[in-house]
Length: 573
Image 1 (cartoon, rainbow, N blue to C red):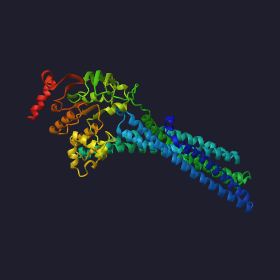
Image 2: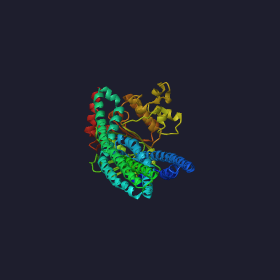
Image 3: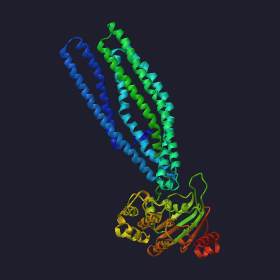
């Protein structure tokens, strides 16, 4: 885990190395100051040597300035290194998420990924900054101050060594108790983020059903769980401060008590006692810093584990071994295909055998849960088949370069997504170099051009996040235009005209026949009228193909198709 996280330092290695170097030099200066102070008191003030006092005073001032300079440089380097480290860490996580297949994304909730990219990265960033600065300063200060203290008076220095195991043992006990609480708390953050995102995304539904109070209760429950765990963790860690204070002031009292006796017995000077008290403060402050590092490490350990889970997640779907970059045509073949969403789950598609010629229009009909969306998602390799194989352009889809395959297979998903930006910017997702004329042409094919021109800003109209300022039918037509802009060899519409009227639906299908005859068109629909004129219609039920044929053939041989058709005709009547 540490190796994986350390890989994000990269171009900030120089600053990550300079920071502890500057810290070490800062500590050296700070440790020298009490020694100079002892000489100033013993050899200058008590001896009444004004020249020596001035010389030692100047040396003390110089050491203080040098220490301050090294402190500033170390802080600057640490801040630059930690901020850059966090940036790289977020970038690595985000890039890896972009490589995830649908099955990888299914393992993590949206709220969980957001928490890991924000809260968890911040915790690790703070820990990293402490490691390259405080975690170097504290041990260095502890060692150097102990060495100087022993050089002054070995007997009194044993007081420090007696305090270290007491403090260390207490810190270890608190960390063992607090770690599970922090781990649980971050999982609760995932839940809270999920609740907030669901509420904001579905705020119109919430208000339509007057469920504000229910949503408030969900939020308060999630927030209260975090508050309870956070309070418990802080209560455990709160014991570190009194333990630290007890050890610190206990050492100072003991040093003052025994030191005073040594001064009376002429075994120690006043300057040396003051130096010992200064070193006591430095040693105990370094121990306090170590306790802070302990606390931050406990918090960041749980976050680091969650970050590495994202970094270690390998995409289930990658470029094929042959890495084919050209799709010859739009033919699609399914050979004994079976599919399941989870490796240990049941097959939701079984024994699928299909042969779709390039340029054909194919309709897919079936009830909810019959496997329609699962079937078409195998064509652009959004998922991989568990059994059998899927061929596009005569080649197994697992042999293609993913980008090349998906450039030639355009899919309008069941859940249409538009992004904040202008209509032009959304359309250019299909082709970033598309001209205005090309965009207008595909919008005419998808019957979107007419309503776009009714907007005051036309194609420069701003689309709100999620497309909330356009209707469902308008959103569907824009998504179809975006897919057409790719000029694909295979076009898949996954129930993508459900929100448009039958007349507009007919115009879209007519435009497809006339304008893109060589493109294979696979249309999933609930209305028979949407697929009635297809070259072949596939009837799915329970994850299996029940019948294949034209409208006329299915009316004769398929009771399922005939029942759906007659019920819709009756409904329209």
